[in-house]
Length: 164
Image (tube, helix red, strand yellow):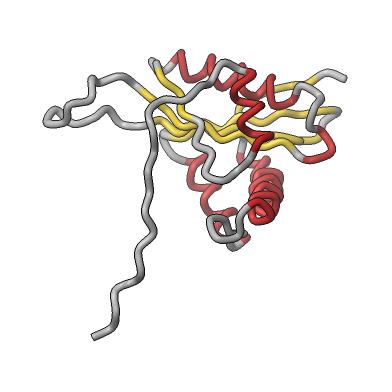
């Protein structure tokens, strides 16, 4: 069945909200200490603001038989400031979501290919896909598209400051 990938429009906001919430529920199952299901109204406002603003976030959607079944967000990052040691190279983060009933049908691959093209048209040279919980499916998906490790991200959880 044909997959249509296109830029998201304001009329897509309800579908984008549905995708974000479905993705959140899936991630909460992976690791409830890291992920949460956000407030529906906050998600709606976010997508309305993003689609109305000068694009720092590109959102593409995938339609199958007229239904939005996936999305990809490409978050354009700013170049490192002049005082930092990183070489300035235009970069972006990518977040891909496909509804459960449509995984394995090429929707994610179509979204990723369109996102890479859109990012390249904006001068993006590096795309990051952050995976913060043991998510073998996401690692397999991005790895099959040519993504690989780049450095190491270390973190440390701290106790909140005591009231005093």
